[in-house]
Image (cartoon, rainbow, N blue to C red; front, side, top):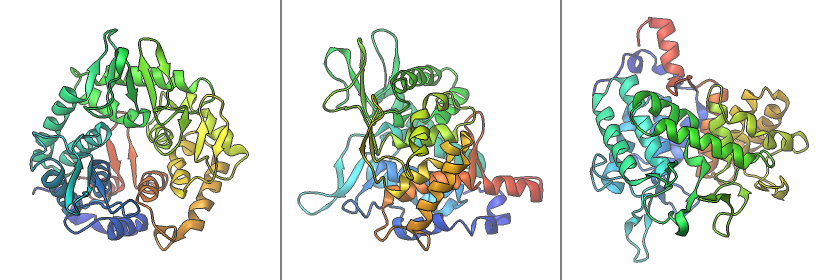
Length: 369
């Protein structure tokens, strides 16, 4: 494997990212399986995709390669160029372990493709871009649709999200704004710019009521609606929308997502569940990961007071790098994204490219990475 000079020349720069070290020790097996220990020790295409991204940010090509290998072998029938990864792997009803649900998850597919493309660029591994190109081709074939009225949509998965009457159940956290910018620039002939424009329009429409976004909503000929399977509730999925907006330079979504900032004026931590139409609290006591996820969002809004409040929540939960007495996978993922961005371990540029700390530091020291 060809690896950029930074791997050897700058390895010392990433040794004090304690949250990554703790995540790697606790949640990543030697063979590259990322384990959700608080949910039946399962693995998901999301956990594998996020693991790839964090290994890249941490400048660990060895870990990246092992995570990619496990993902391909266990979720994609041995070949990511031909098969989108199954979203769920774990213990089956008969006690064996393997794929539980073969349906892919489009957010994980985009994260895998994005991480592969950026690893190819940053580490100079052309094979990664080849795999990413095929993953994106399969995403376009199986997960991107165009409605009868010409609207481009990213389905959460190939199966189960197309409803009757030309309606679709969608998840706004599945489309990081910076990733769609990145894909639109790298593949201008694709639908990525149209997906981004429509995603921004729908986000603004949903958030107009109270400045919050839901986990799920339904879109169809009559516009946006909420149903029993897609209620007007923002919670564990929606928290990522604020995170992605905060990570995206000059985000087009940030200005419409003011509900969360207003909520934090009178609350020490974000809501676990909120009604996105009224802005009313449904349940408080959000897990610590929510506080971490909001750090880039609050930084982009210049809200230092709320940043300090959320950092206090995180500090209270810290147990030597792990968070909480029973460390939860999702809390740590959100922490790596949120704290990692705030602390400068990585940033995203205006075109959606990843700029890890080790690349910037290497350039300053050696002048060539």
